[in-house]
Amino acid sequence: MFPQEKYDIMDWVSYGAQQRREGDRNRLVRSARRMRKNGFSDLDIADNLDTSIDTIKEIFSSQPDDPTLL
Picture 1 (cartoon, helix red, strand yellow):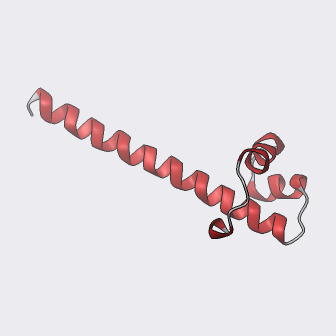
Picture 2 (cartoon, one colour; picture 1 turned 90 degrees about the horizontal axis):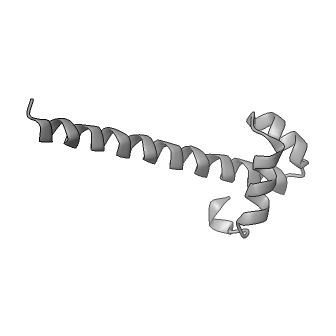
Picture 3 (spheres, rainbow, N blue to C red; picture 1 turned 180 degrees about the vertical axis):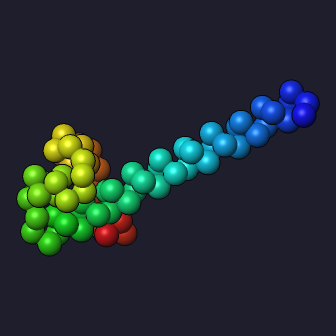
């Protein structure tokens, strides 16, 4: 394998990992918003989604409510 091919493959793998992280984050945001819409408290949302309460508070404080994310 030539050195350039090795780096091209590494770029492709890191790009895929980045896309997975973004997808995981988007799923977390959608789930948290859906749960809040259904009346769950922030603590219950954090507990059910297995994340910290700080992450849940950051989701609701930094992002405006977008109906397309529900």
